[in-house]
Image (cartoon, rainbow, N blue to C red):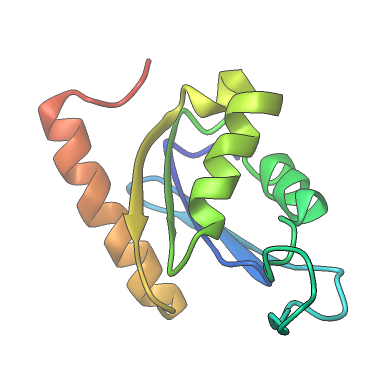
Length: 131
């Protein structure tokens, strides 16, 4: 079933895609296949000290979107921005459906769904959703 909206919560280790309409919702949970997500900077070692973005995780999120027309991306750190850049480079049609990027810590499923519903009520009322 294709829903009207989706909220994606992600960090560098996992993602949750909650697709929803007025009466129903579906959730897909995705874990990164990487063994170690922590990278510490050591003195005298070249490099930024940051792990590369997990493109495989990003592609799994893309696969879970199911032609949802309006997408909100949320998360606690830089993964959400990296995901938007990935969409712009690899999936511009999906990038055009992103209506917001919000900072959000680690919500429960219910909190994430409520956050998405509140956000999209405002977007729908203002007529900002794509389509």
